[in-house]
Image 1 (spheres, rainbow, N blue to C red):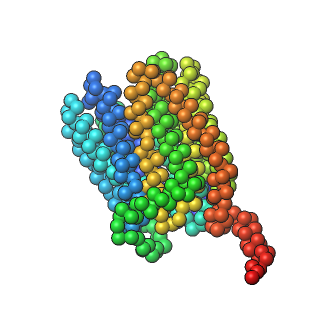
Image 2 (cartoon, one colour):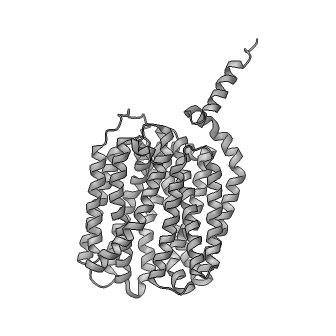
Length: 434
């Protein structure tokens, strides 16, 4: 399960990320609580606005960021994004220490969230593109991606709990201070890596042509196109349920903050279990079928959760939903990473970030608007139905997508039996006549 950790570069990355991600989750919780505390009567829609401000830049900047990552040194880009994130957290700490009542401070927080969103738009394609160079064996890439997902969800369980204790003892500002300091671990790990030198790829002079080439490649190759579209649908339709959890906790299940914490933790436990399952797999073979099962499980879980009025049943369904969402997204990431051409990796991962993070804020805004007159239960039911339909459509396309992907995997040696068959067919083919 931990075979990718045999590589020194990946061990450094894993350790640095482990420290930093705890700080990141602390900042997420502290930001929401600070906006809630300062927003007064407008707190609900201000929370949505700040969340949108932090995620939407990935949708708009992602394609450009991916093209630039393919033109620049990815390691350098990642170091710069971590330093900028450190400075942004320090700025949030300064704002929180000086915060006064009223919404003026909230809009300053929203502005800083936009800046962090732009940084994240560059960070995701650079991070995902560099990951393949941190492991020496390509067959360990899937394990590296799954371990990274496990780390994200493990810190998701630790960070918010630690943030709650820090906020209660000293206030939100110190969460941001801890987060800023935690970025030093990632920067140190990145600087300590010994990565193989890569020749600077030849790129067209025009960034516009470079972007168009990336669009044609990503959406012209059927397997990558299908994975990106399914990922965008799931992100748009399913991820917004987490925004509505406070309403379910209070109005549907009749609980309070403790209930909300249990619901959030249940989703996190499911996501962690899903990531560990992927880490235990030894090959990418069969991941297409895994994506179908995970997507259908997510849709069923969302529909069941929207109808449930029992806390124990809701918790179990959220474990299933968290696991289904994590497996679907991490497996899609793995398949895209193993199929993509190296010189186009940054651009394709820019589209991945656009689908994964960029579609979610639009879904959240629509879900919030619809919940105002249709109710949260109807909205989440609709989300589950959309996810189910997306999974079924993807399942019908799976045999065709496999035919497209098989030559790529044979060429890379991931399907050695297919490669051997192709070689044998070539050797046994009759000589052309005439």
